Length: 204
Figure 1 (cartoon, rainbow, N blue to C red):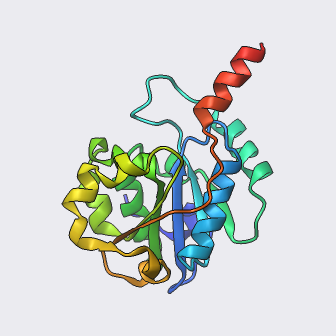
Figure 2: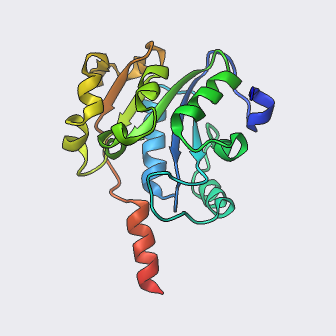
């Protein structure tokens, strides 16, 4: 199936530097907002798209309904340069590598950067076709509390050690041909969706 910009539900211009932050956002929280704003600044991005997934193949239990999570994302992340998207539902994809392939197909000429927390880099080698992700576009890794050592010692970090940009060069990541990745340490908000869900259940 061929994808074009009209089917994606949002518009991007050629040459724009656009960060992609994927996840279940179950629920979205200030940690997501914080790393999004840091990514815009540190990687000199024009926009960031939150790719709210229908479900995470690596999680045993399904998330809250997609419509509820989309509404919560829009409520917490109100920024003119951030788009909330259910592209994976529209495209029928469940794995990141395929999602990124379709986005590049829909928006030729856009300079995409995949964004992830350091905790995701630590387990990236478990993702389907994870090497395709690293080879397809630059990857920006934002350090989260307690996950820095595991991330920097991960299989993905080792395999692509030659492609790592020093943190001081983070601003040029989006313009660097892949494979290229950059690990940035940022003042972090130590929140996780898992902890928020647990707290909510305990209140019931």
